[in-house]
Image 1 (tube, rainbow, N blue to C red):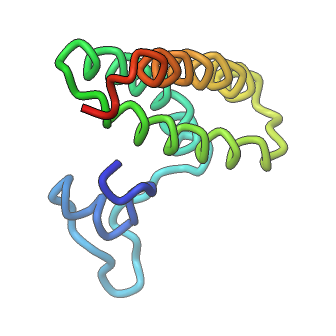
Image 2: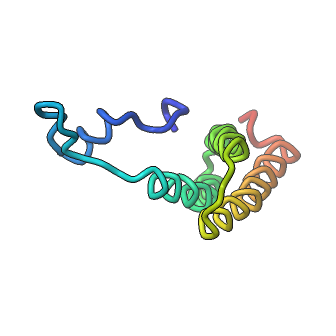
Length: 115
């Protein structure tokens, strides 16, 4: 969330401690469908983090989470999903976006984000 974008291939390799590309061979590969599945599961965890950050008196972070998840949702809308499980996960993103927006709305109604 700090960079407001998904991690690059090089960054993922560094974090996981994996070797880079050697002699034109990709030492680390994730299938596109699996990567999309991971991204589709991320909003539900971020929705929980959003609520927990409010409990911890961090009222700015839910706004950042909301922006990121909204952009992620827009990206999934541009795809033509044929995988049933991936399609169901995409549908659950809509509910996660709504949950996060409700938290951000509650924060703004109570004027907590100005503190």
